[in-house]
Length: 604
Image (cartoon, rainbow, N blue to C red; front, side, top):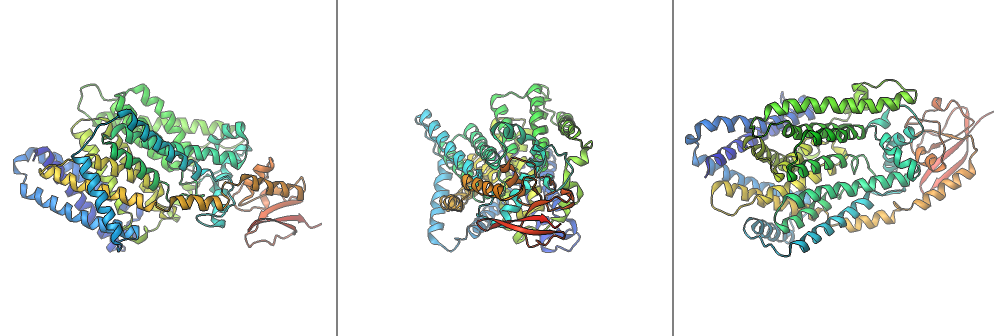
C-alpha cells in the first residue's frame, strides 16, 4: 500500500477513535467532567470535531518522517475494524428505518448496496452522453418541483405535519418579521427576529407581487426549488458514474424533503444560502476560477446570507473564507496557512461591515437605533440559545450517521486540498459540503427539536461523494475505501426508503388545504366585513390576516400586547385560552375551520 495512503488511513482512524471515545464518555457519564450535561451540547460537539480533525493533522505530519516504521499489521487491523463498524452502523440504519426485522428490506438493501457499489467501483459505461445529461437534469427538475410545492404553503392556517396550533404559532413568528419590516418598524431584537433579518430581503418581492402570504410562500417555494437544484448541479458536475448521479440526485431530493412542514425556519430558510455557497465554490473549482474578484463578489452573497439567517449566515461566511484561501494563494505556492489567515479576517470583517451597514441604513431611516454586532443576532443575544439547549434524542445514536458522513468527507477533502495540494472540483465540493454541514450541525445539536431536515441534504451529498471514490482492488487502502462505499450505498438506500411515503405526504398536505389560498382569502374578506375600520391586531396569527386586509395592524410584538395597541376601541386576538381582557368585551368570534379570533370592543 502507498505510504501516503497508509498515513492517511492511520491518521483518520486514530482521530475517529479518539473522537468516538470522547463522545461515548460524554453520553455514558453525562454528569462527569467530560459529560454532555457538564460541558453542554455545543462545547461537546466542538471538542469532538477538534479531536478528529486535529488528531488527523498531527499524526499525518508526524508519520511523514517515520514512513518506514508504519506497520502493515496496524493497517490490516484498522481495515478490519472498519468492516466491523460497517456492520454495526448498517444495523443502526435499519433501526432508524424501522424495518430491521423485515427480510425484504434486508434483501433489497443488500442488492442495492452491492450492485451500486460494484458498478461504481469497477464497471462504468459511457453511452449517449447527451441523453444521460437530459435524464439527470429532468430528474433534478422533478425534485425541484416537489421542493417548490413543499414550501408553497400559502394557507398558513391549514392543518398538516406538526398540528394546527404549531403551524399558526411558527408560521406567524416567521411572517411577523416580514410584516413589521413592510410597515417600516425598526429592528428591536424581539422574538420575531430570532431567525435573522430576512424581512428586509422580502421587501422587493412584496412590493412587486403583492404583500400577502401567497407572495411569501412563492418566494420560499422558489428558494426550496433552488436549494435542491444547486446541490444536484454539484453532483452532476463532480461525480463521474451516471448511475451514481442518478441515485444521488434521488437521495438528496427525497431525503432532504421527508420532514417538510410549515416550519419554514428550517425548510427552506436555513438551507438556501448554504446550498448556494457550496455551488459557487464547486463551480469555481470546476472552472479553475479562484480569483480575488470572484471572492469579493461572493462577500455580497455572504452578507445577504447573514441578513437572512444568523446561524446559516455565519457558517456561509466561514466556509467562504476557506474558499478565499485559494483566491489569496500565489500561483505555485503550497503554503495554505498564510492565505487562510488572510482570507478569514477579510471575509468576516467585510461581511459584518456590509451587513451592519445595510441594516443600519434601514433601521435609522425608520426611526430605530444604531445596530452593533451584538444587535445583529437579535433575540439570540438575549440567552435564547442557552434556554433551548438540551441533549440530542436517543443519546445521539440516531444522528451519529450524519456526523460520521460529514467527518469522512471533511478529512478526505482536507487531505486532498491542504496536504496534497489538489483543489479539484470534487474535493472542493466535499470540503464545502462537509464544512457547511458541520457548521449547521452546531444549530442542530443545540436544538434537535427543529428536526434533522436541515442536515439531511449534506448527509446524502456526502454519501454520494464517499461512494464515488470506490475502487475495486485488493490493496488495503482501496479495501478501506470499499467498506466506506458500501456504507455510503446503504445510506442512499436508507434515504430513499425513508422517503417512501413522500407521495402520500404531498397528497395529505393538499387535502389539508395547504394550497387553498382562495379559501383563506375568503375568510379574511368575511372578517373585514364584520369588524370596524379602526380595528387593531396583536399577537399570533394576526399578521397573516392583516396582510390580506392590506393595512397596518398596529401591534408589533409576536405575543399579544394590549399596551402596544394603545387601548384601541376595537381589536382582534387569536383565541389561545387567555381570552378575558380587562376593560373589553368579546362581541364576535370569527372562525376559520378550527381556528378562531376574538373580536373585542372597549367597554364604555
